Length: 286
Image (cartoon, rainbow, N blue to C red; front, side, top):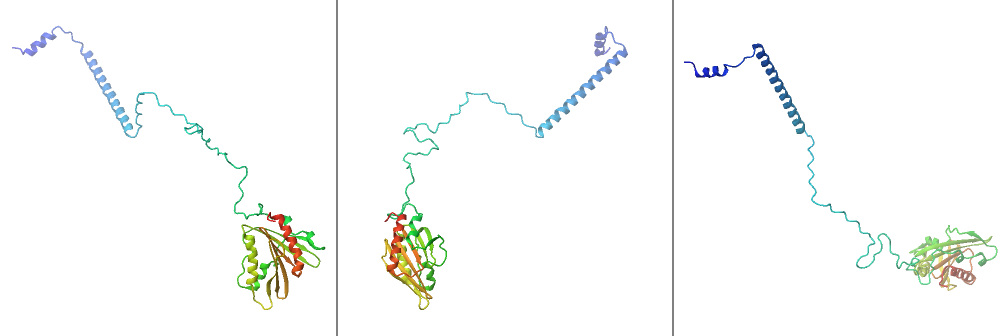
C-alpha cells in the first residue's frame, strides 16, 4: 500500500504545470543575488551605526536640554530710584553735591595768634629802618644778612648755655646800610604767640649767662628801656674789638640792630626810637 504522504503529494501536484528546467535555474540564481545584496546592505548599516556611536562616546557635545515652556510673564526689572527722590523726612541734598548752607564767604582766621598781632606774617619793608632815619652819607646796600655780625655769633667765646633768641620765629627780613666811615645792619623777626617777649628774655639770659673763655673779653647789657614795648642795648669786647647791638620789641616783632660805631646809651636812644616807630608799620600793637 503506497505511503499516505506520497498519495497526498500526487493528488496536489497532478494538475500543476512545471516550468522548464532552465527557467527554474535562472530564478534560483536571481534569488541568491538578492539575498547577498540585502545581507551586504545590512552590514554597511551596522558598521555606520557602530561608527556613529563611537564618535558620540569619544566626546561629542551633548545635545542641549529642551527649553521648558514658560509658566508666566517674566518679572520686570525695577527702575532705579533717583537719588533726589523725597523721603519721609524731607528733601535730602542731591547726591554728589556738597551742601553750601552755612558756608562762610571767607576762610576762618587762624587761631593761636597773639592778641594784637599782625594778620599778615610777612614783614613789610615799611617796618624796616629807612635812609631818612640815618645820618647823611649812608646808603642802602641791600638785605644780605650773611656774616658774623649778630649777637649769637659771639657765643662761641662764651662758656655755658647759649639759648636761641628766635623762639617761635615765623618770618624775618633784613636791611644793610653803609657809609664811607660806618655801617649798620638790621634784622627784624616775627614771632608766634607770646614768643616775641620770650625772645627778649632769651637775649637777657644769653648775655648774663655768658662766661668769657678768655681774659679781657666781656658781654653785658649797658642800657634798657630806650624805646618800644621793650628794648635793651648790649655791648661786647672780644679780643679788643668792640661791638654794640640794639634790641627793640613792638608787639610780635623784634629788631636786632648792629652798630659799627660805639655810641653811648644816650647816643643810641634816637636810633632805638626810630626802630620802634618803624616796627609799628608791621604790627597793630602800637
